[in-house]
Image 1 (cartoon, rainbow, N blue to C red):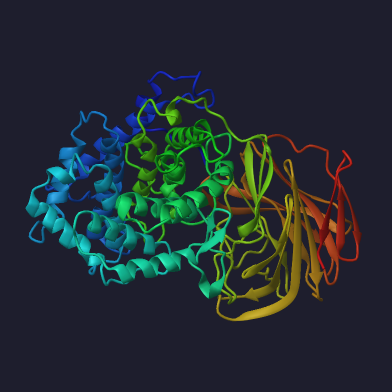
Image 2 (cartoon, rainbow, N blue to C red):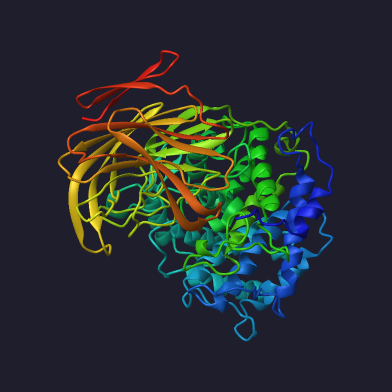
Length: 616
C-alpha cells in the first residue's frame, strides 16, 4: 500500500518558510498551524447548507443519520474556528460571520438545516459540548454579538442536556461542559446532575495522570487516547468556562492530574511525529495533541514539560498527518489514519467525525509571543518509563515508540473476543495490529496464545496486571477459545512477564496447567514493504521460528507479516522466553541470555545488567 498523496493543503503549508532555529525538529511555526486551520475551514464551505448550520460531506452516514452528521461536521469544525477567533488574531476569512450564521439557523426549529435536539439524537449531546467550548473561546467575537433571540434559541437547544441520559463514559464530561456554558450565560443547569457526574468521573481516575474511560465491573482497562482528549481536556475546560463559579479546588485537582500525565504523554509520540496507534476513534488523528497544545492555557509554569517539548508534539503530529495525506484531494479530512482507510470507520463515524482533530489546534489560543511558540523544540530521550496505573511499559529507541501492554483490555470481567486495538502485548506509532481476532489459522501480532485440539488460538481478555516496575511488568490471563464469542472453552492460565530495554522486549511465558496444543509468541505486524524490522527470537530451547502473512490491510499497508515462535509440542507447565524486536534498522545482535529456575527468569544483558521476572 503506497503512501497517500498529500492534498493541496500540504503544498500551501509547504511553501511557508520554516524556522529551524526555534523548531529544529519540525521546522514548523504558528503560521503553519494557522494556515492548516484556515485552509481546512475554507475547504468545508462548499459542503455547507444554505444557513451554514450543517455540512453535507460526502461519504456513508453514521448510525445517527445524515442530519446528525451534518451537525457533527459543523460543531467539530467550529472548534477550529473558536480557537482561531479566541486567539485575538485577525479574521480575514470571516470565520466569525460564517459560523454565526450557522449558530443562528441550527437551533431554529423552522430552518431547513436545523439541528436535531439533544433529546432526539444521542450524538447531538457530544456535538453540543464541542459547540460550547468554541462559543466560550470566541465569546467576544460571536456570542456577545448574536441577537438576543438567537442567544435564547441556543440556550433552549443546549438545555436539552438537562435530564437527558448520557453514557457511562467520557460523555458525562460532555453534559457537564454543556451545562457549565449554560450557567455562564445565565441559562438553566442541574446541580445534582453535574455533581453526580463529577463524582462518577473521579471514580474513573486511576492515579498518576491516567483515567479509565468508564469502569465496567469496577475494572480500569478502558484506556486509550480518550484519557487525553476528553477525560483530562474537558475537565479543565469545565473549570475554565465556569471561571470563579467552578467548584472549590477542582481546577487545582485537574491541573495536578494534568501535570502528572504530561511527561508520560509526550513519550507516546515518535520522532516521526506520529502518535501511538492504540485504541478506538483514531480517525480523530491529531486530536491526540489537543491536551499538549492546551496545557499552557490551563497551567502556570511547565509542569515538568517545557513549552518547546509540548509544541514539538503538536507540530510533529500535525506535519506528519498533513504530509501523510490525512487531508484528501479536496482538503477535507478523510476517515482513516494516514489517508482514507474505510475499515477504521466505526458505527458512530460520520463524514465529519474526523474533525474532532480540531482539538489539535487548541495551541492557537496562545499568542505568537507565548513560550509555547518561541521556545526551542525538544523531544524525550530514548529509554523506558512505566505507566504504572495502566500496566504499560513505554519505551523509545532510535525515536521509535513501543508500548508493552500488561494492563489494558477494554473489558469487563466476562470473557470477550480479543480486541486488536486493546488486547495485544505491544503497540507502536509506526505499526498497527492485524485487524483479526477470530478464525485465524496462524497467530496475529503481539500475542501469547495456545492452540486447542481443534487448532483454535486462544483469547486474552480479561487480563489482570500482577505487578509493574521500572522496566518489567507481569500479567496473567486464562487461555479461552470460542467460535462465536458467546460460548467459551477454558484452558490453562498463562502468566506473562516482560522486560523492555532499547528495541527489545524479553517476553517470558509460564503455562500454569496442561495443554496439548502448541504455544506461540508473536511480534509486530509489518507490511511486506516496510522499512522497519520486526522479529521474534527464541531465548529458550524448544521454540521454532515462523512467520505468517495475513492477506488483510491495516492503515500502514497490506500483506501483513507477523513473526512468531512456536513450541513443537504441548506447552503445559513450562516457561518459554523469546526476544520481541522492533527497530528502525536491522535487528542488533546484542540480545540477552536467560536462566529459568522454576517460575523465575533471570535476564542478563551483554553489558552485565540483569533483570528478574517472577512468574509464580
